[in-house]
Amino acid sequence: MAAYERLPDMDSAEFKQWQSLLEQRTGVWLSENRKSFLVTNLAQRMRERGFESYQEYYESLDHGVGSALEWANLIDLLTVHETRFFRDPESMELVRNHAQKIIDRAAESDAKEPVNIQVWSVGCSTGEEVYSLAMLLSELDKQPLTNKNRNFYFGLTGADISFPALAQAREGIYHQRKLAGVSPDLLSQYFDSLADGYYQVGNGLRHRTCFVQANVQELESSPKQLYDIVYCQNVLIYFQNNRREQIVSQFVNRLAPGGLLVLGPGELNNLTHPLIEKVSTKHCQAYLRAGG
Ligand SMILES: C[S@@+](CC[C@H](N)C(=O)[O-])C[C@H]1O[C@@H](n2cnc3c(N)ncnc32)[C@H](O)[C@@H]1O
Image 1: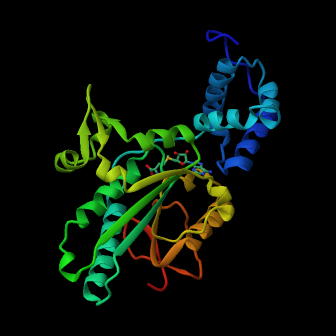
Image 2: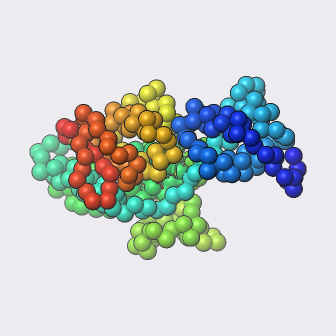
Image 3: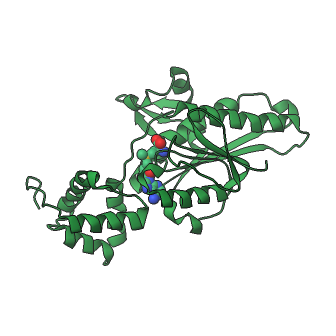
């Protein structure tokens, strides 16, 4: 199909087939009103790969050499990567308070081991959320814990299904247009200026982060590391309710005792789980795991 050719029409059976393939493999549910999004993005990829019919392309994803690689490319086009620095300031504030409490508790205790805060940002897209949280924790790191002989460490893991988004996240290069949410003070402390209005997150912060490919539908088989903070916003909204609950229960399994789970406001109503308790806030949706 040449770039100027009209997209083929997608009938309702074809739409259902793609809708269910995407849901099976990623959990993302495309409602009927997002059909044009599906068609536009599929057609872009089909043109690049020289496919003329949706069926032929669909079958090529199911078997054959390179089908897994092709799926990885397509998935990037069929998922929404919109994000920005400090996107939800109130949830960020909740994280700051939680981390501050961990630090205060450590400062009061006689223990000597380092304070270590580990954060997991799930559905991290191109990295803005991870670096926002990293700046927030780095600012807390300026407090004098040293008189207690205790160091403060923190690390952040960003996870996403999209390889291209993760590649961008690892590079940490953003145009100044994308940096509106970062104050001039944080910008000068944590970013290096590059040419043409681009900035790169400095090594000090990048070394605290790692970005890994993960499908939230398959967390059961992924390593069971525990995190003090699990942050997942604007991901579950693309999933059906029953899947949201299963995924959140995997998050809870990876929360350290006393850990904080932050979701996007309204992303999962009426969540009940025996191990967590809702944090009482006006605008955020957050939970604490018992213990700690
Ligand atoms: C709209 S972005 C949200 C980015 C960021 N959390 C924020 O709130 O600004 C949604 C991200 O979820 C990712 N995603 C979608 N389905 C996923 C899945 N099954 N497993 C892991 N990540 C997924 C997409 O690739 C995308 O980067």
